[in-house]
Image (cartoon, rainbow, N blue to C red; front, side, top):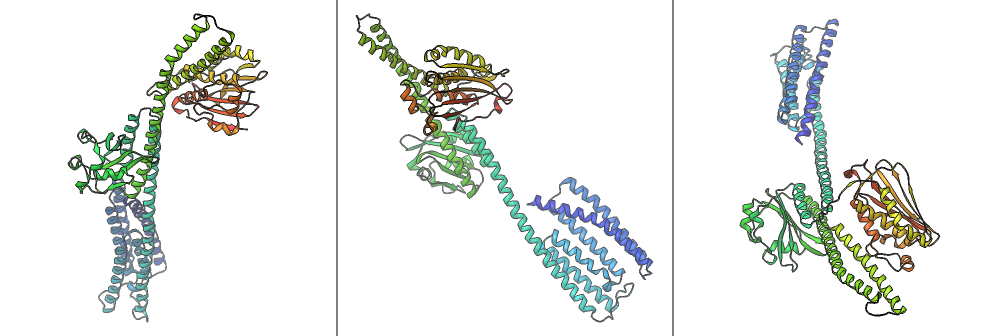
Amino acid sequence: EQIFFRKELKERVFWFIKLRWAAVALALLGTLAAHLAHEPLNYRALLVTIGAVLLYNSILAIAGRHLGAERAELRTFFAFAHCQICMDLGALFIVIYLTGGSSSPLIIFLLFHILLAGILLSRRSCFLYAIGVIGVLLSMVWAETVGVIHPDPPPLLAEEGHWVRLGFLASAFMVGAFLITTIAHSLRMKGRELLRVSSELQLTTSRLTALYEMVKEMASQTELQKLMDSATRLGATIMGVKACSIKLLDEEGRYLRFASTHGLSRDYVSKGAIEVEKSPINKRIVEGAAYSIGTISRKDYFQYPEDIEREGIASMLCLPLKAGSRVLGVFCVYSDRTYHFREADTSFFSLMTDLTAMAIERLRSELSKTWFFNKAAHQLRAPLHALMSMLRVVKEGYLGPITERQLEVINRCENRLRLMGQLIDDLMRLGERRARGLPLRIEPLHIGDIARRVVSLFAEQAEKKGVSLQLEISDPVPNVLGEEGLLDEVVTNLVSNAVKYTPGGGTVRVSIGKEGRAWVKLEVSDTGIGIPKSELPHLFSEFFRASNAREMEEEGTGLGLVIVKEALERLRGSIQVKTKEGEGTTFTCLIPSVLQPMERAGETDGTEERD
């Protein structure tokens, strides 16, 4: 607020100095006109007065530049404004005395300074100036009446109604002071409100921007501890407090343990688990209530009150970390100032808490899924290989001759086991992909070379089915930024599906070309069975296979497109699908080229387009 009014004062007082130069010029012109009209005035005294105004205005201009350079306080500008108004009123009263005293036509100009005081200064200052001006005028009239002063030319004291006109003039001064201060006060109130709203809007915008960055950082984490550390560090920064913590409930819901902290001492955190039943505050929060305390005084509410005092915590705000209806723990921010948190802070921190809880729950679920994939794959691989070996022994006759019917059953078993092997391989791939901290080996690659290799692998299978498998590469195609293994998985899975679900006589086309300056487009289209519209939303879900795909081809893991989508996301690419049931499907992948820095390439989820 002080900055706002200092700017207003600074602009006005400097404008007043510039205006005074014009007033001096007009005064000189007026004096010259009076002289040419042979008015009986004391021209020497008038010129001396005008010269004095010229002198002090020069001094004020120099002082004003000094104030502007030093970024003076608000009270200095107030004093500067008072000084100018007082000096101008003094000079104006001298000119009024020299031009007829109480009968001078220049008396009306006194109103201008009262109006200026109402605009720049407080209401009290404006009324004091108005009362002072009226007092001086009354004193001047009295002095003229009793003969103490003798203006030149003499005032028209004998003129009837002189005191009445003076009374009206005084009334005009007071009414003018009232009106201008009322308007100025209203404008200042609106200015303060606008400044307050602007400050709150700026704070909210900066907080939302920081919250967006926080969500992005949490979403990029693949380790639960790093995610929570990121949440507490950014939470303390965004809320502008000394410390932040996340406490998670154990499986039984009896104890809260510090999972991540920022700004808290090791001694404070090392006290161990907090028993919920012995901590009324934490019990209320775990039950779903928000808790904000402005000053830490009711020490019996805390399990370790002496530690809170020693830590320098003066106020705190704690909210439950809730994922749906389940409470995961408690998210707290701590301030070293009493009554730091307002209602708006609670609402914003509630949003931050909900987003953090969602991120924790999502990553927990993802890690559990990854653990299951790895565990299931490892547990199934050994017995699967043993079964395959035993079937080979039986099939090759080491245990005696077998009939054609037995051979047919063994072949069917081998096919089933081979399908299970593919499923295990896909599970292992997904597990490796989602393994925490697994780095990418990014390098420039020519996707055309990978596509040629994959197409040659499926050429025989396509020929046996009577499917035309075509490869088109539009030169020149820039290299892409990627990992060879991931790109190979993308092309292999898309081509495999296209060949598998395209009947004989159909066509599978793989095309590669530039898409603008920053992308390389890989497109795999077929004239196969297509995908039903109602099933498109589930296309990239794990273990999902379209109903017409299951009818046409019994074998399939339902993980191929999941692998494709996750591989492209890791490469910061995207995938789109356009399909019509019974007519075919086109998958379009965009992959960052070497012309686009990795950090600028957008991350895009798989999306669908329907005919």
